[in-house]
Image: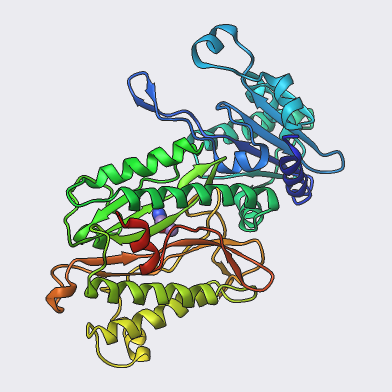
Length: 432
Ligand code: GLY
Ligand code: MN
Ligand code: MN
C-alpha cells in the first residue's frame, strides 16, 4: 500500500486547518536550455503529503466539518505519454495515492474560487513562488467578484509552512526507514571513494566513484552538489569545482550524500590522498573527531538545539590551543570568538527531504529542545587556510567529519557508517 503515511499526514494537517483550505502545488519543471529540462524534482512539501511524482499537480485540502483531500493532476495523454512517459491521470492517481477526489489540472483555476469561498482561512506558502502568489490573488478576486451572490473570500491568508515544518521536523518510521537506506548508500559511496583514491587522480574521479555507487545502489543521485576538495581547497567551505589533481601528501575532504525517495543523506569524510595520515594531519583530524564525539554525546531529548554545537566548540577550542594556533583558555577563546578563522560554521542542521531541512531552530527566544525523531547532522571541522598566520606544517589542512543522527528516547542513533577513525580509514585505503 502506497498511501498510508501520506494519507495519515494529510489527515494530521487537515485537523489543524480549522475550516480553512490549504493549497499545496508541486514544483514546476524548469528549462535548462532551449528544449532540455533540468531533471525534475517535486516540491518537498507536496511530496511529504502525497508521494505523487508528477509535475503539474496540486493538492487541495479542505478542512472543517466535512474535510476532503483533492488532487489536481495531468490527464492521461497517449501522445505525450509516448514521448515523455507514463501519466497516472486523475482517476488512477486518486486511487493509488488515496485522495478523496481528483480532477484534471486544467480545471484548477475554475474550481479554486469555489473551493475557497466562504472559508475563513486560506493556507498557502506565501511568497514561495511569484506565479502562485498571482494565482492565489486571482482566486481571491474571483470570489470577491461574486460578493453580491453571497460569496465571501477568506479573510485570513496564512502560511502553510508553519504547520508543515513542525510536522516535518519529527520523522515518522516511514521516513526513518528511507533515510537509513539513503545513509547506507552514501556511506558505501564514501568507502568506495577511499578505496579508489590515489595521488595524481582528479577530484572529479572521486566524485565519479560516489556517483556510481549512488546510482548503482538505486539512489536518485546526489542530494546536493558534492564537494570533493583536496589540499587547501578543503578550506573553501562550498568548493564544488572538483577539478584539481590530488597531491600525494594532502588530505581530501568529500561532502556528499545521495537522495533516495526524496530524502537526503549528508556525509563528510576527510582522508589522506596517499592512504596514511601525516602526524600533523592526524593531530588535526583527532581533534575534529573528538569534537564530533562530544557533540554526538550532547544530542539527546530535552537538550536545546545549540547544546551540541557548544559541546563541539569546547573541544575544538581546546584543540586549537593544543596546536598552538590560539592561546588563552577555552572560555576566553569561545568568548572572544578567536576560533572563528578556523571554525566558522555551525555544527549541524536538520536533515530530511531537504538537505538543510524544514523546521525552526528557535521556539521564541529559546533554541528548540531536541525530541525523539528529530534528525540532524553532526559536522564539526577545522580549516587552516594557507595564508593563516600559523605554523607552516599546518597550512592548508581542512578537516570536516559529518554524520547523520536520529534523536532517540535516551540519546541519539548515528545511522551513517562510512569509515571514520584514523585506523579504519587507513585500513580501508590499504593496498596490499
Ligand atoms: N552538504 C551541506 C552541508 O553539509 O550542510
Ligand atoms: Mn554535508
Ligand atoms: Mn550538512
